Image (cartoon, rainbow, N blue to C red):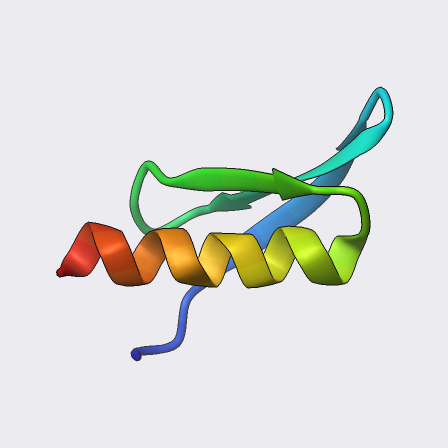
Length: 47
């Protein structure tokens, strides 16, 4: 996968990861989980 730019921020009890290159986002209980879920969402998006 190409390099992607993303931000992670806390919203209530979850961390939200949002891609800055395309309009895709995800969330998780931890920062690592949010980033991992974003990576999976991006793979599905580009598929």
